Length: 374
Image (cartoon, rainbow, N blue to C red):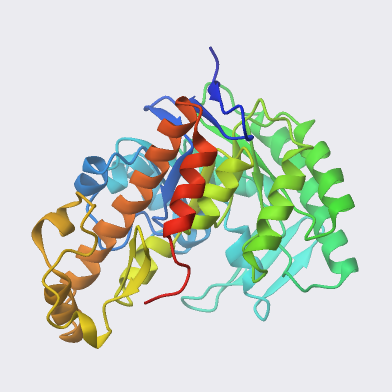
């Protein structure tokens, strides 16, 4: 038994269940990781996350580096002590955030220079520094610094970014191996845009490096969902699938189930909490928008089949009233529901894989789930 153990494979798809064992807890996969960018999942208490069965959250090194600063977190005894979260934390390297700031950053061969979104000061991330900082804050799973290119970037830009990501991956592994007696695990990231040959090359190169897990980056960046799933399915065929596979930035119900079908183990996305702040909610029939007039006197729960705190306690009409009144409680209640919905969906998917009927479970869910907001 190692860090990652595959427990069951579905015979009709690539879907599988497994478990990741960190120094803090066991994480059963497939798993959804709520995004706690700044060491907090927006509008949700850690106690509520625990009640919902959350085993791991994601935080972002870029934002934590800018505020409160790595030194403060280290002084607090690490990110877990600082944020009072006892289970696992995966920290993103901040690569996506840095590279999305196209007007305020400069990519160099040995790292990236960028301006702070807080005060405009200049900073520089190298692959080695990113590893060092994540070790300092005691991350359980650390992501390497990578270069993410946009969906419609020119071929030359995508190729250069992929090659640079591989170079930085090698430097990250070398830096990581300098540190002994640490419990953190290091994940590599596959880039390559939507060029299949480049994706294959990067997948094989990353698989041959000494990573504990492998992420598919550069997806969910503006392309259609069908293109995302096609590229996931293609790339998985060239990855060392004895390691946990992680698709970054994927969190809608359809996308999650399709990616699980491709053999993916881990996901993260801001979507469940972000749509909560705009008055939207997941249901088994699709996403609903509580701003709509028809919910003004609808005294039923958000989803009658849901057993979350929000659905047990409050009606659509009340939450619509809260949202219309700009009461923060609307965001809290919808965040609880949307996260519970995703956690429950992934748990049901795990059970379906264990019972060897994942494909029928997926098809039944997709038959009922309407993609348009109503």
